[in-house]
Length: 379
Image (cartoon, rainbow, N blue to C red; front, side):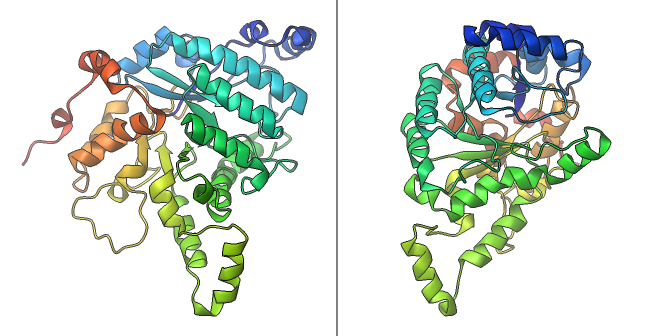
């Protein structure tokens, strides 16, 4: 869960519509020589070289990945948003390139398509295109001041299309955060402080807006969003949604208006996942993920059935090349059963993103590991 890929800047020219080649060349002249991606230098080529990527990750016991964009055409250093026309071209070029990139992985690489929701009919067509071309899911677009909110029924055709083709939705960390300027330390640290809020907006908008009631088979993963906020927010929403008798009239109004019919914790259990990336104790207490000898009366927990392990290659904060140390921390936790560990390490992601485990088995046999080898011997 949670790798990052992009083409070399110049490569996108082969994937944009020919009518935009002039604007692309102007953009290349502006950005040539500027930093291109927040990655470790020794892993930079892994963004666009699938064989290097697969070789690097195989040394970590990682045989398959869920991939997110690390940069698109027309992106300007220090800026996070583009005009709608160029956003469309950037998404098209990235998605077309991503199809070719993932094809070289032979089922080991599943990329998430970039789809803009401003034009609903176009978004529906793009969802079907992503499915037809073998992409593994839809990345939630930025929610900006001109966007339709995710609870807006106008977006229902998009949710219907996503449900129909059976692709998951993924909310990646920081998507939709403001374009803080001037770029620098303050902008970076403010973004780091606030990105979980902007990432989480899709969760409460879709829960409170009844989207999961209208489309019960939707799956939404929160990937590299940090995890500290999920428990208090779910408990807060449960409290608000679990209204007593004195709220009966208001509750009747909410039901009549098509709002949520269940508690947030119930939606989480059936529709939502946390892609914990990079998987590190600073992100979440492993105790909160295990099910062995845990008191279930202590409130909401993310739970092993709704968590997925992330490496975050090739970002600076990636746990590569020390992945196995963090796997051992998970497996060796006294509250984590073998069943918990398997769910978090691969079973949940395989189910949500529809990896073919039988087809991956030869690669697993070559590069995988046994959980028993990571469990400390009894004293």
